[in-house]
Length: 544
Image 1 (cartoon, helix red, strand yellow):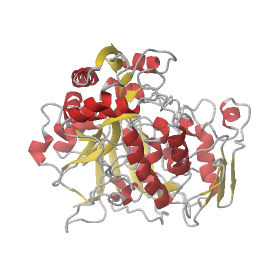
Image 2 (cartoon, rainbow, N blue to C red; image 1 turned 180 degrees about the horizontal axis):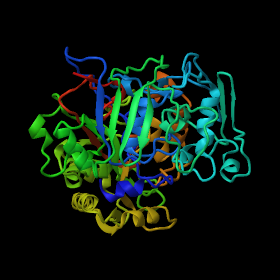
Image 3 (cartoon, one colour; image 1 turned 60 degrees about the vertical axis):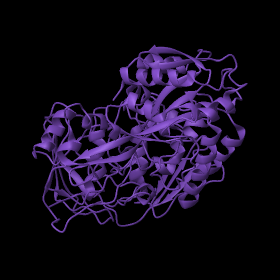
């Protein structure tokens, strides 16, 4: 993965995590389940992980960590173990239904089901989720959840150590109420993250992480030896709806790298490995040639990491200049740009919209050309709107994003736009983009959300309320109103509203969408019941 992605993940003071999956349930694109008549219940599925940070939900922020926690967590809301689009629809898990949201968007009220129990037999009450939230805000606990829940009433006081009680969260029996200092449009989807899965109400906070925690999900960690292994077995008290076919998982933590972990799967010594998409497409690995694609062992699915060219709307070139933004979208050869930035044609899916095609509510607006530019249309839109004809493009100096920027420079010269490239180290690029008055007009960007919700692809990227995501300082009162209105909706109504908004916003062209990075999965020959979201849903897997 190029350095820009790693730098980008610090936008909201986050660690570089594979939010590429929601444990394998966030960042998720789910395929249809595959199976054979030879599938069986039971057995131990073997996993190889080189990147495990913590098994404590409050601290874990790694691809491997979230994959493990997806098997052990019970959450207020979750993603069902189903093919897309249903597999990316936020649905209740421990919550009885979607939360009740106050008219001002600042208060969420959840009612919980009875029947969920921790692996020690104690019942799951609202206090389990209240404790999960407060643990992430405890002084000294460096939790990635803070980027999302710091606006809960009293969070600042808890973080500062001024109090031990989080005023904005109340738990009484099976009712959980969360109060925010400002309207929040995606807290329902936030609760799908492992950060906020149920924990015992008396569980202490530990800056180093608690190693063995009673869990309320299908499985429980029974042994954890850092750098050596994790042992995961069935939670005998689990009565939830999630499939859990194997007896458990044996996790090998001794592998030195994702590449070595994939070697273990190829050799049949592991059934699945924790690895990022680029690891699957390393030169010389040739998984497609060895196993085919989407047959039985190697799978490729559209992911949620989004690549686009950001336009700086605070600068004269793009301020109130929709026609130039549209001209660029018509002028770009998206295929050439994707090929410049990736190592394999299997690694991406072209797009001219912001919403991933696998999310519920998506509809294809067919707005801009994907395979080849429409220079006639582009030149017509650019005519009279070039405003001097010069643009400064900031880009990471890493080889792949810089190659993409060079290709974009060539393409945009054809409509009369002289693009000057300014390559900088990844973190320096971010610092520059956030510096007021910095003279950039275009920037190459990857966006990697931590959970699958349309809010992450529109509100966070284009609402002035979110300056850490809205790097281009786009500010349209009409679209801001529509984004915030959609964010207040839930269920099918929410997805339908965002599907319409996506087409309208992409037509307005606040940036130039280019592609979504695909995600890959490799399993051993004995794995069955395969659901991909976008990598293997471990909880639903079975063995032949």
